[in-house]
Length: 357
Ligand SMILES: Nc1ncnc2c1ncn2[C@@H]1O[C@H](COP(=O)(O)OP(=O)(O)O)[C@@H](O)[C@H]1O
Ligand SMILES: [Mg+2]
Image 1 (cartoon, protein in one colour):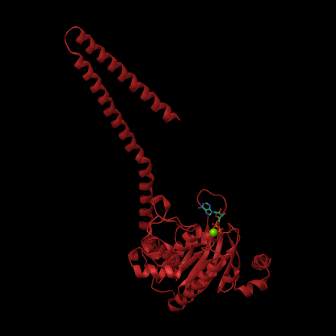
Image 2 (image 1 turned 60 degrees about the vertical axis):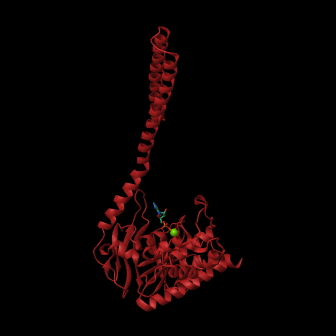
Image 3 (image 1 turned 90 degrees about the vertical axis):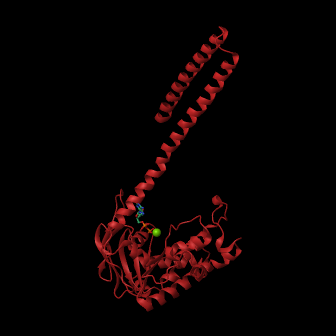
C-alpha cells in the first residue's frame, strides 16, 4: 500500500507538471496567435504535439515499470539456479556403481526440516538389503516421505549417514545418483507438456525415444488413455495451454509412467503413488511393480522401496519398516511383525476390519 501511495503521489506530480506546462504552452500560443505572431494552426499543432509527447512519456514510464517488475520473477529464478549450482558443486566425487552388492543402510539418521521444531526423522537405523523389496508403513506425518526424500539426496541428514554399498551418500555425485533412481513421489508433478514429454522427462536422455516412452506407458497402464487422446502421444496436456485436462488419477498414471522410464535403476521407489487410482487399477500397477522389483533385484541388486497403505502389497515385502513420529519402531517381515503384536499388528487389524466392513 505504501508503494501504491508513493506511486500515486508521483503520478499526481507528473500530471500537475504536464497540465501546468500544457496550459502555459497553449496560453502562450493563443496569446501569440491573437497578436498576429502565429496562426490557429499553431495552436492545434501544440495540442497534437503535447498529446503525443504525453503518450510517449507515459509509455516509456510503463515499460520501465514492467521491466523493473520482471525482476520480481527473475530474482527467485536466479536464486534457484545458484542454489542448484551450489548443490551439484557441493556433491561428492564418487560415481555410483552399476549394481548393488550390500544395499543401502540408514545409520542413526536424524533430520529436521528447516524452520520446524520437531525432528521429522529421529535416529533411524535400518538396512535395505541389495535385491530386496522394503515397505515403509506408518501413520500420516510419521516420516515415510522424508525417508524417501533423503534416499533421493534431496536433503542432507542432520546427523548420521546413509550408505550406498558402504559409501556415504554425501560422497556420491548427486546428479549421477539421481540418474540411478526410478521414483514416483506422493506429490508428483503435473507437467503441462506434450504427453510424450510428460513421460519422457523421467529420463531426459531418452525424452525423444518413442519406443522407451511407449513401453513406460504400457508398464504404468497409461497406454489406453493415450489411445483415447486426440493426438496420442503428441497431445498437449493441460487446459491452460489449449490441451486436454487430465483427471487426478490420469495425472498419477502419467507420473507412474515417468517413473518407469529408467531401465536400470539402483533404487526403485514408490511413495504412495496410487492414491487416486481405483482398487483394480491399483492392484494391476502394484503387480507389475513387484514383478519389476523382483527382476531388477535379482539381476543386479536394485533396492525397491514402497511406501503404501495397502497391506496386500506391504505383506509381500522382504522387510517392513514401521514408522511412528519420526522413529523406526518395528522392523521385520509381515509374519514377524504380526507375531510381535505391536503397532504393525494394530494397523493391520484396523485395515482388515475396515476392509471387511
Ligand atoms: N517440507 C516440509 N517442511 C516442514 N516440515 C515438513 C515438510 N515435509 C514434511 N514435514 C513434517 O515432517 C514430518 C514427517 O512428514 P512426512 O515424512 O511427509 O510423513 P509421511 O510421509 O509419513 O506422512 C511431519 O511432521 C511433517 O509435518
Ligand atoms: Mg508421505
